[in-house]
Length: 493
Image 1: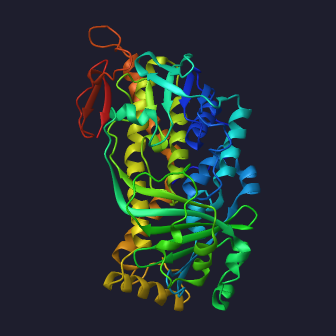
Image 2: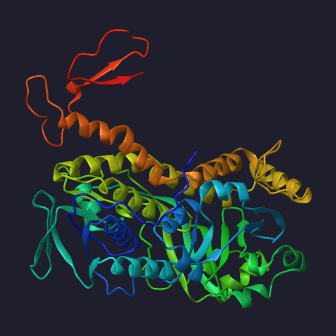
Image 3: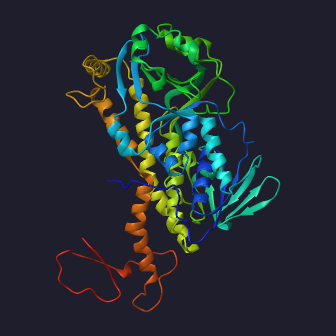
């Protein structure tokens, strides 16, 4: 059972150090905010002007992400810029036939201590930026990094200026210098066979095509998310801002590895969508002008997120690229920041830095890779090719819909094997509390390591800084009656 937090005040680190963050997107800013909250000094370097990199598209904020932002004291401002969503309406991409509806379970949301929210990338950026600056984070825009020397904890700018810090953080994305440095320039990237088209469209125009059955099901004030399943293509849509616009993500079968945010607006969406299409989606496809094409790639896993020098760590997309258009990409970025700050809230000696960075990798790596696989799995569920498995999925959903049940309710069948597995993963991901995990690491391992390092070795010398001395630990059976030798820490199993 998770403990209920009652305060937004974060414990301050006994020792404040300097962090230099390369990359001023949401990944870099969220790390800056989180670290500043626990008392550290942070400088962020961003190559852009701070305006064009904010983005105007939509994003879904899952409970595992919103709970962290709430804990950071951002709930009031999020309430002003985000919409809280409860239902998802499922339909067929090509015909518009309704497959079912899902309302987020109140009990599930209470357990997560978060909410499912809808907002724009721009608004989230602004919320985090304002909070970081208010805590003293320094941000330099229009700064180009020419070289990074982790061994010297130094960054050289294009103008020749050299900056140093106690810790370097690479938050410059999957194509940035920091990820290339960790891979030594040899990363393998493979296309998944799908491309996402990110679209912002008039809500009023889209709603003109809504049929009577859907109008009866959908209350605009509930901020419904629409999900359309198709034969090798699919789409999702949801309101953003003040509900005047809808954000859409179209999943299309298309080989590509290099399409990304920042590219010129895309024009090929209507050529990929067949004429037979849900009228509500067709009007968006035909009339949308604000369209961005994004590749869905499988990136090679980065074995080490911490540089050999123990002075540089990569976070966010630089560490674990996650497919765009889903719900966990930005959430993993926020979780990264929260875990990093939780660990460094215990810093009382620079000798701990290396241990904390490797603990960060251990806590985050498996979690982020599983989130990536889950996001790809959801894309495959949206775009499942017509056949027996698709028919079973649709039959199961429609049976529950006719019975007045949520499509994800437990039953004899559960959207087919793939759908049931995906929903189990979603519930697990939503319920995860990254800050609790970081707290548990400190109690179970961090304090143990500190005590072992501060104790004397058998020869009377202190443990080496930064190295865990297993000679100070003895593992014994619970039932043993033998005395514990002096000077040894005992772990009972």
